[in-house]
Length: 346
Image: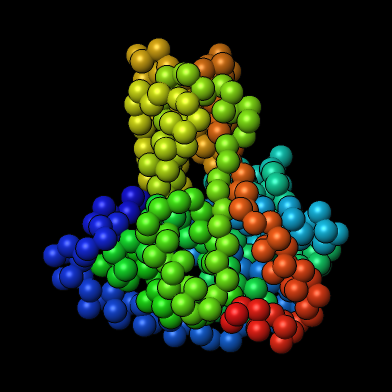
């Protein structure tokens, strides 16, 4: 499913205004749900979520945080819902045994970077992670899900999208009113430049919430292959235009775009169409690491040389800022100490 374009207009359109009463009701229901107390699963929980429906960069952020924690001696597990997979969980994702149809595309990607559990029941998933030896859980998505007690709540914001038109679903992309959601978080992470992200950051700073800046950096090997090449951009993600921008920033010329809805279930005909488009344009096919989790079983071996998978990694502009938040969390037990509360409000 692709998000409607009118969501991203800075000034709400007539359609958005007509839908605004529904959005107000939806946002208030979500906000009340967000504020319900969660269950203590017996270990610390970091939630990496976002304010809007659709992609904002949660998964790369969760990967980066899990890596930072592992480097500091923790045993982090990532907890995900498993959207798009048939398994309800709780189950640990095994990249050698599971397919995207089993556990979802994002968990399959995540499991290549950190030990990952999927569970529709987040409390059961956190308890499984604890039983498997986790010292803490990084919860990818779930900022609006009240089931688990969270010791640190981070909201990820795409700098080029921000909060869209500032309205709640279905009138806009917000899951609940922006200011109230910011009050329910401990810090925000703005990924990439852009006026929309700057506006969200300004609201967060006015609410005395820490604002961390970050960028998504493609892998060096992918940049080397893309530079100076014509490519067909193949993706099934929330914001395909971001992937196209990444390709152009890496020095590629985008000859064609094949953009499917987020979590698209690829077929052999999709693969054949992508390969045919690349041949017609004398180009390579470029795709995301997330899409490759579903494309890999379908891609013919004799066409691999025309394919470029483009992994991205999140890089914090000021590593000391995220280190400071994580250091406080690592010292916390079942609840954050007063020192964190004062830092969050400074």
